[in-house]
Amino acid sequence: MSMADNTAGNTSEGAAAAQHAGQIGLWERFDRFGAESDVAGAAAEAEELGYATLWIGGAFPGHLFENAEKVLAATSRLTFASGILNIRMFPIEDTLAGLAALDKTDPDRFILGLGVSHEEFMRQEGEEFVPPLAAMRAYLDALDAAGIGEDRRVLAALGPKMLRLAAERSAGAHPYFTTPAHTAEARALLGDDPYLAPEQKVILEADPATARGIAREAMGLYLGLANYRNSLKRLGFTDEDLADGGSDRLVDAIVAWGDEETVAARVHEHLAAGADQVAVHILPAAPGATGLPREEWRRLAPVLLG
Image (cartoon, rainbow, N blue to C red; front, side, top):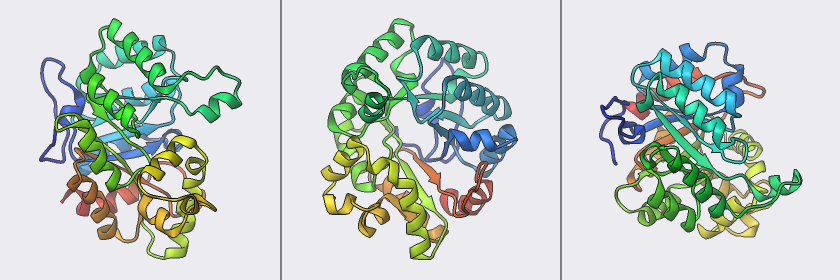
């Protein structure tokens, strides 16, 4: 599914949105959408700049689909993607209702990114833990039964088993908190055809101490979760790398920081390793920054999309 251009397009007959998403997307947390008073205007600007996809992470049911409707209504080419829809938070009925509403707007420009919650969160909240593969298979079964085809969804996949499931039962994978080395391994496991769109954290900050401080603050949650720790260890990082907010080696591997050209070089490493699209996740350099980072979008567009 590799794409040569940086624009999203439309197809007929309901082909997968993932198949015509371009090479560079934007990944944003749901709370930054919530702080952005002009979601439609921001989406229109992202499309005008040449970005292919807006991925939204961590949203709750109404918030996700409401923002997707706003984005699709304000644009003509931009794809909107859930990165990811947490299947524990989204009962299948809510997901199907959201998809039905979006289908009235533009069924070809929404990617349903699906993921399984973390065992740590489930146990903290007293929920029964269901093994991730079993939970995802059950959710995919329900989507199949409702007529939602494999070509409309991708899976948040890090390890070999979930990556293989993504290849077997979806359009592909959306790995999070990874490196270009993981992208190369994921491509080898997926094979040539499935879609692969890793997230890449970036900071437009050239001072090493400042950039790494911002990075460690953003990484702290993930370094406490077993699936991310296991993924990093498979990539060759050690317990020492994972301790105390992450070694410089780990921080620099997970977060691309520096000027625009340095950030762009990391993004293109993913593409060279087999990614079809890279979801660029801009971490705010200014403490307490809210809203979508539209200035950073503008600064990066010439080097990422030129």
